Image (cartoon, rainbow, N blue to C red; front, side, top):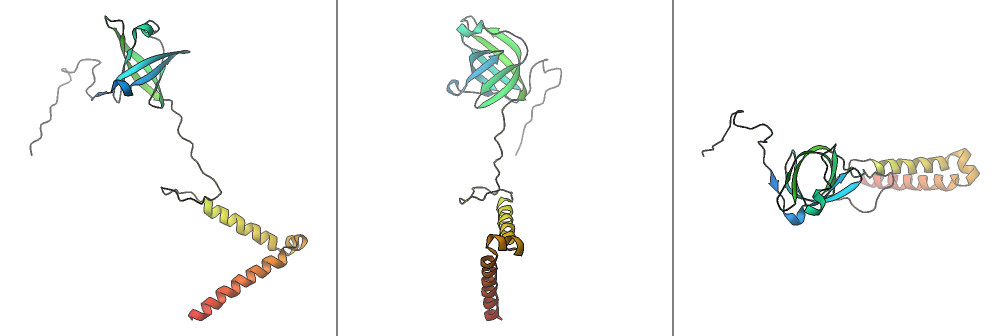
Length: 179
């Protein structure tokens, strides 16, 4: 199996050009919004890469574009801080611009954790100890109600002690049958 790898020298790469792949985006999937200050300008994402995006702005909104500080790009349920690199005004009035990714501004989904156990099974393994903590809390609460001082004042000590004795005798009887 022969594999050909083409490599170019640094002198062949022009300054400002990237050597990585740009992924074209369908126009129907490329709807996005650029926020420049308080203005929201609709754009279409033409290409995306690890480095940035190539955008198209309609002729009626092209005059609102000002090359200034960082912008926000809202695309595909994500917010990204971008910096404009270049702009090209086409003869039909549309503008094509390239923006460079600076940082992701999308808030991550909150991590849902609770001390209360759920009755439905999770589709994925979750490494939380909520069921164990809840069980420990319930046992500590029952033990507190069974204490002679608190349990006698509340009237629950006799019932809890009887229940614990009943469980103990049941386990003891089952173990005796096996031995």
